Image (cartoon, rainbow, N blue to C red; front, side, top):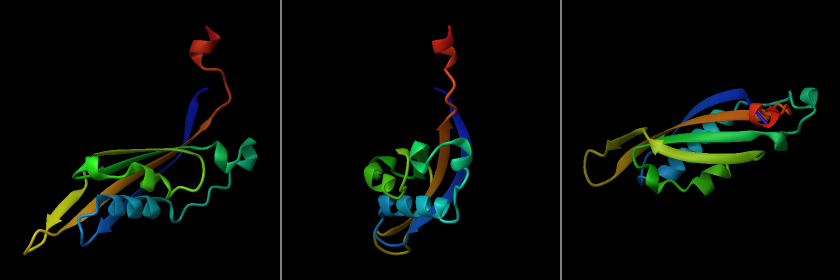
Length: 121
């Protein structure tokens, strides 16, 4: 099986109060897919559930992102979410609060149904 990248979407999400990186990440994914309507599956003999959806989230503290909660933003396909160092944290003028900005890259791939090179050898 070889995956073929079909769609790449980018988004940004913000948590203004509370320093919640997961909330910002969910909003970034929602932003990335909000205007997408993928209708090419029938032409390829596939369904939305045949998609592989790989999400990369950039936030200042990737270890605090609940990737399972972020994955629930995507209604179809086999979803993988990875959090990496990125995004922004803008400290509040006073106190310990901050604005957290997350960036998301959502990549949709399909199996091309061709044997991989390794299996053809």
